[in-house]
Image (cartoon, rainbow, N blue to C red):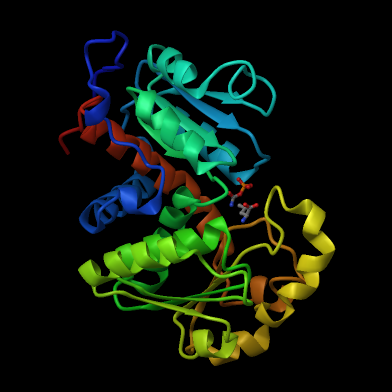
Length: 331
Ligand code: CP
Ligand code: NVA
């Protein structure tokens, strides 16, 4: 059992030594594998790691709504021996009455981990720059890295590995999930294909970062407007809502824009026999995925949802251990 070692005074921890998880590539390939191993260990023995014993507090801010992220972080912080403090939209001074930098410095003297679901990635970066405890991205407009840890854990469980598998994403290929599939997928050695309509493809900077990471791991990247090209022989097929949080005004237009990229039985037939179907949820049956696929035998979406808990516990513990803020138990 580790002793609580929260950095309650300014001189204990230099900000630069603290590890954060803001984007998928913040974990090097070997580090991502370590976190996934830890997640599997925690899934097997839920209370083995107690880096937040005390209980120390983990704060979880929401600027957008949530079910899975809220519950999995709340339960996960408690499982790690800590107590969660959930802050809903509009409940704190953050972002409207107080700067991110002041907030980061105040929170760092009181809590042991800062989790934040927000809009701009730049806000998370600023929080991390000024925090002396780990900051975790619980979804931004650009990335959803915690979700990808859960997805990769799910693929490992069902396929025995991630390396060398083809993972295909169809739909809004310019959104946070598409970016994270690219970056986390290649980090795990996967061949990641993303397909969406012209104008809704990932930014070149994300594709370049994914290609650079793929060169280290043996993975690869394909970006295309052709769903059939992306699907042929895929081992894992994934999609996400066509209308992300903040895009509600574009709902009607988006419902037709992505129609050719829906995952239905015909799309799954193009993938490899025994391909898995994943979706981060919430899902809209009849839009990005048909009911027969998401409720069918190839779907592992509820394993994926459960794995949010195990993956996030693992990343919180790993960041605390690697930042020198908690000691790893000797097992
Ligand atoms: N997948 C996911 O992040 O779900 P919530 O929006 O419910 O947290
Ligand atoms: N792309 C979606 C993911 C929801 C978990 C959104 O940002 O709303």
